[in-house]
Length: 186
Image 1 (cartoon, helix red, strand yellow):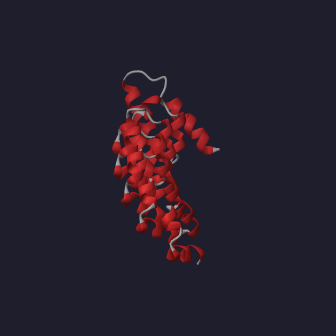
Image 2 (tube, helix red, strand yellow):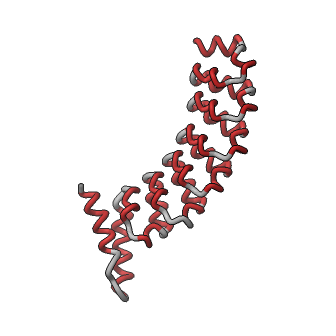
Image 3 (spheres, one colour):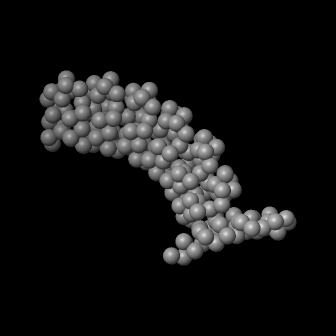
């Protein structure tokens, strides 16, 4: 409950000031906000905090879903988005759509939460590097891959090694491969 009180204190501290006192009060409010270590506090913060890159970066590093409460201009900032997806890969869904085509961002999201590949642009669903890394973490992600990767023996082998049930998502030819079947059943 203390965090909830701190959230409203931050908002109260940043509203209602005029003149030179406002700068000093905003600085102390910003320091107080940064010390909260609760990314969700951004939801209840003054709009100026939701536009402040330093505050937003601290919030998304603590909780990637804090990206929900960020000003739309910062949802286009690669540093902010990268920090958010490294904390929670699902934050990719909240970022500007352009990042769903950005290989670095997508790879970081997939390394944190492989099923974040559900949110990527279809062009990256053909990217072998991304899917090879993702299926090593969760073989069932093969389901999200382009059909060309479901025919790729290396990708399917990595997926089946991680989770035998991934063979279900392979191409028909690879589903019938005796070596892959043995691994899947093994």
